[in-house]
Picture 1 (cartoon, rainbow, N blue to C red):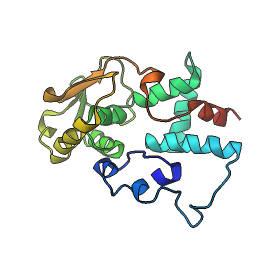
Picture 2 (spheres, helix red, strand yellow; picture 1 turned 30 degrees about the horizontal axis):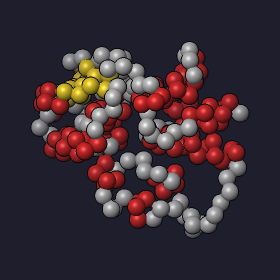
Picture 3 (cartoon, rainbow, N blue to C red; picture 1 turned 120 degrees about the vertical axis):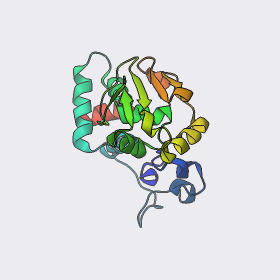
Picture 4 (cartoon, rainbow, N blue to C red; picture 1 turned 135 degrees about the vertical axis):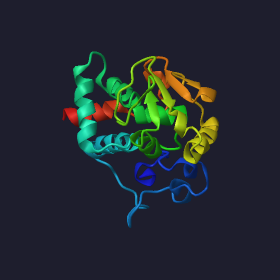
Length: 198
C-alpha cells in the first residue's frame, strides 16, 4: 500500500522505521508496470489522494464516505472538518498516544477491551472523542507485552501538540481539536472534496 501511494503510511509499526520497509527496498509502485512512467488524469490524481487517506486511517469506502457526508454538514471548511473527524477516532488517538505501534494494532487493542474512556471500557474503534475526554489503558492490560513494546517505540515518534500524554499513568486526552497546521501528514484534502463533489 505504501508503494502504491508513493510514501510511508506507517502501517506496520516498527518495521516502517527499519530497512525492511517495502518503500525503502523498492520505491516504485507495485506490479509489472510499476517502474514505467505513467501520466495521471485529473480523476486519477483525486482518486489516489482519497485512497491514500483511507489507507492512512485504515477505513473502507462506505465508512469513509460517511465521514465525508458528516464533514459536509458541519460548519467550516469540509476538507479540514473531515481530517479533524478522522483524528478524533478512538483508534487513531490510541495510536497517537503511543499505546499501539500501528493503527491496525490500536484498533485491535480497542476491540479487545484494553482501552477505557473516562474510566469505562470502550470497544468501538470509531468512537469519536471530545476535548478533555481521558483515554487510558485498563489496569489489567498495562503489563501486556504488545502495549509495553509500543510505548517504548512511541518515545521515538513523539506525541502531536493537540494531545496530552501522562505516560506513567498510562493515560492521555485531547487538549484541543487539531488545527490544520498541526497535521503534518502530506494530505491534500481539497482533492478529496473535489473527488466527492464531481
